[in-house]
Length: 480
Image 1 (cartoon, rainbow, N blue to C red):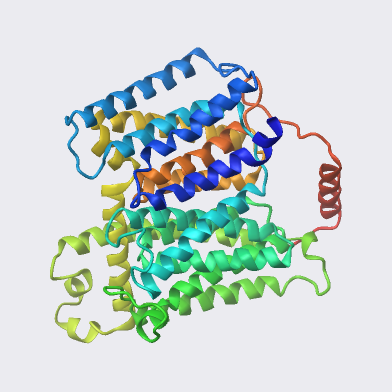
Image 2: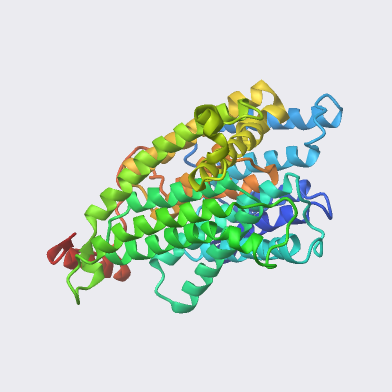
């Protein structure tokens, strides 16, 4: 039983929770989410494990309180007190299952890197079906509807697939799997573009830049990471060609400005020139695993830092531009010269960017985790979810600070998950798999006594080889 649990049980649950919301149009799936934590709890009982082992009294009280609140919310929904038509009793059941999952996974924690691939296959299947149904053969697969919260679910899946595929590609040496990861990234990018999910796209670039700053800047790793960043950006820059000048994507209301593509590719070229300049400093014939691109990583840090600052300014300007109504910021400052500037490449790009940022902010404001909890549970729900997010962020901070990371890629993915539920519109049925990633990152890194400390990894044969490689790299490393 233990072997089944450790090897198959958990990845099957991850895949099932990711796929299940796709069937919500065919059947009520809310009740089915309860099967996952119940199955894990029953398995723990069969294995005669103590579910309350290593759990503090305060934690048990917190779980019980959240569970009781969710039950009360479900009862109020069933008797008609909570009348928001956007959320049925199924969503309340999903929230209850999430709370039970927090408790159930406590002593069933296991993580293997290949779980990422299971997640990728399930998410990739959803994206393929959705892209074909939306952009190629319209309404051939009647699982999703345009203009509804189903798009938010697809965007959440696309974001997850994007991060998993990009992260796996960076460390993968198998040629076939590299192709699978590249195809997955392309598919996720096209899905975001079809849905005009600019908030998801912005957050994707931010997370990739965060990873470029956080890792050891080994040239072999940085090369693959930069390939991902430039490849994704190049695809977005050429969406205007795919949408306006080909018949590959046929979707009403989807528009991309050619001017934005021109400016975007110009910026990409300038960044690529800098990267090539740094790359040319590597001595010919040098093994890339023994080269550290510290200067290039520092440039990525400044790009992330000042790029974030510029993004904040653009977010403020997008709100101002939205309030101006029929006018806009360019017209406000240009005055009588607006007629000449209205077709200018940079002006069109600037206004298009402001419009996309404003749309992303509106969607986040009305659909992120705080908004959803307010719509479902009122002010009490906002207070509770704020506490939960604060505790999760603090626990994740301790995990990173005290070097309790079992898998850095899993921890990075958990950071992305937290950022996504706060900054992007969500669908309740997609939350369990997001929460499970966060729990796996926290539970697998938690020491036995619950105190912040460094966990020493057992010195297995694979670990010994890894340490030898690091020592060799430190002995003959090139710092560029």
